[in-house]
Each structure stands twice: as C-alpha cells, then as structure tokens.
Amino acid sequence: MGHRSRRRIGLRVSAAALSVIGSVAAIVPARAAKEATKDTAAAAAAPAAGKQPAEANAPAQKPSAPLQRFDIDDFAVQGAEKLPQVEIEEAIYPFLGPNKTSEDVEKARAALEKAYHDKGFQTVSVAVPQQNVTGGVVTLKVSELKVGRLRVKNSRYFDLDRIKDSAPSLKEGSVPNFTDVTKDIVSLNQWPDRRVTPALRAGVAPGTVDVDLNVEDKAPLHASLELNNRQSPSTTPSRVSATVHYDNLWQLGHSLSFTYQVAPERPSDAEVFSGSYMARIPNADWLNLLFYSVKSNSNVATIGGTNVVGPGMIIGERAVITLPTREGLFHTLSVGVDYKHFDQTVKLGTDGFSSPVTYYPVVATYGATFQQEKFTTQFNAGVTYNIRTLSSPWDQFDAKRFKASPSFTHLNLDVSHTQELPEGFQLYGKVQGQIADGPLVSSEQFS
Image (cartoon, rainbow, N blue to C red):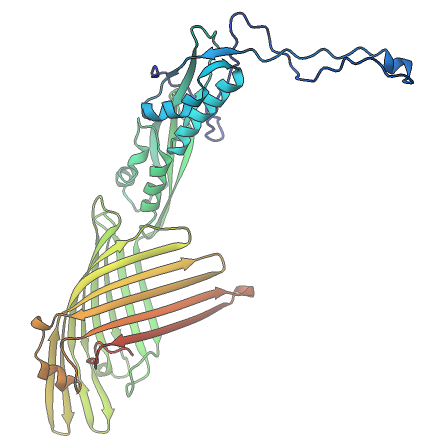
C-alpha cells in the first residue's frame, strides 16, 4: 500500500498565534443519503394503560439515519514530504478495510497528524477535503507550513546573523521540527548576558509561518570589586579582589577575564594575579576550552621569626563538557592538566633553605546543580592524579612536606544547599572534604 504525494501546502494560522488546524469534511459516497443531525434511540412503544391522553398520543421520535458505510482500500496522501512513507503507512494502515464510516476517516486523519506532531512537526496539519469516495480511495491533504521569514529583534550586543546561524532548525524555507528548535534555543541561551525567545505568527506569504527571535541582552563587559577577610593564618585580615571580564570576544562568545587580589595592609602577605580565556568550539556547543594562569607572591610569618616565602605559578587548561540537561538539572564534566611551580623558602633568622617543587597534575571534575523553585543544591567532585615522571624528585616533595610524594592522588568533594525562606531570607550550608593516599604538599592539601 502506498501513498500519493502532491505538494499542496495550505495555511491555517490565526493572526494572534500559530494554530495548526485539521479541517475535516465528511466523506459521503455518491449514493449515500445525508446523515441525520442527531443520533437517538427509537422509542415507538405503545402507550401504557393509565397514562394521560396527551402523553399516550405523543408521536414517537423517528430513528436517526445510520452512518453510511463504504470500503477503504487506500489513502491518497497529498503534500506529505517530511514524514517517511513507512511511518505514514503505519499511521493509517489500521483504518483500511471494508464496511468503514466517516468516523474511521477522521481517525486516520488524526493518527497521521499525530505522527507528524510526535516527530516534532507542530506546524503540520492534516485535513480531509470534500470528495466522493470512488474505487475505495480516500484523500488526505497534508499542509506542511514552512518558515517564510526569520528575523532577530532587539539584539544590541550580539551579531544578528550569528544568532540566525545558531538556529538552523528555523531556517527560512524549512519545515520547523520543534524538537530541534528546542535544542537550538537552549544552546542560544547558554551564552551569558543573552536570552532568546522565539515567537511564531502567520506568515506574509501563503503557506508559511514567520518567526521572530526576540533577544533580551545586556553589555558583556563586567567588573567587580570585593573586600573580604578570607586570610591565611598569621597574615593581615583584609583582602581586596578586583575582577574584569568580557564575555563576547570576536562575537563568538569567547570570554577573557583578569583578577588581581592583594592584602592592602601588607601586600607581601598575599598578592595574586590571574587570567583566563574560554573559547567556544564551533558546531559543538557542548564543548568549551578553558586556559588560565595564576601568579602568586607571599611572605607569610608562621612561627616567631620563621618566615615562609612562597611565590608560585600555575598554568592550566580544561576541556569543559556540558552534559545533557534534564528538568532542574545542569551538570558539566571537565578534564585537563596543570603545570604548577612553587619557590618556597623557609628562613630561620639569617639562615634558611629553599624547597622549590614542580609537578603536573591531571584533574577531572564533575559538577552538578539541582534547582527547584524553593532550593538549589550544588555538588562537585574532583579527582587529581599527579604525573610523577614529569615532576620534581621525591626529596624535593619531602623537603616541602615530610613524607610527601610526587606520586599522589586525592579526591575532593563538596556539597552546598541554598533554601529559600519566607520574607526573602535564605538558609545556606556547605560541606567539604578531601581523601588522599598520603601526605600532600600545601598547594594540594585541603584547607
């Protein structure tokens, strides 16, 4: 059994919103009588004894005409292009056969339309045109509304053509598959400072639907200045941290960030410079590459006249993979390697010794955020394994910390929870921990 395809596209869209309408006309064989408007049971019984004369003499209702029956040997499906023939046949096959009625035709129409909608083609409708059933063939007409015009509106800081190119499911001239549309919109909204919402309306050209991508955006340049007291032991209490970052370099969504942190009362206690660059990979919105560097200087008084001078540098990269999202769940996986070098010197009066160390840890981290209306829970787990063959020898690790080894592995875990309370208050809690296979140098030890 096959179907006959004709490319006839009809428009059934209201002016206020897109509405896919299946217009159904009754199938009436040439010899069939007109169907009755009401289907009631016959009630032509003789009046019972003792009833009132008016009730006894009331005329009996005429029975409604039965549904006209005919054979359906085949369906001629016009205008079907997006759905494979085998799926069309699977949808309408159950309604073939002898002794059918117009109700069976309506069920076939609804089944075919549902097959389209289940595949994501929400702008497709199926109708039954007026016809005389001859030769056992019933015609079904498919209207596959295509995108007539795609526009980007209200974007101030993001390139219009790049937004269009990032929504290939809404390309002009295509029949939109809303499964793919949802994926494209989710991908567009992963960029910071931008939110895109599609709006569909009746197309200017017949047989089309026009789409507007409405953009809410803000400038991708950000800066912050923070004063806190998160100091290390035996150091001055205050810290000042300044950060500036731009999140749409080259109109590609790349990010560049710089941070400077200092202990203003005594800069030798803490002075840190850091920078990072995040690149998005074309045609792979689930993958980002992150490159970063940290340069630190410190001169921390620990016990009496003993000072620890610890300048160091970290250079690293990460491949950040965005995992498939679910309702209320966003999670990522990152994998990368670092170069770490620290020039620690311990001074005892005028004497002292140096304990520099260099190593190359491989790091894998999983992060998940569970978000509901009243709470947010975050979970992070990271495994660090050091490449011993590239690192400093055993004695340098031991000099930095007794029995520390360049062959180390450790697992870091943390869970935090934010609960919304009445009157705008929040309750926040966090638990952190570390498991290691032996003593760790200070730059790796949990603190």
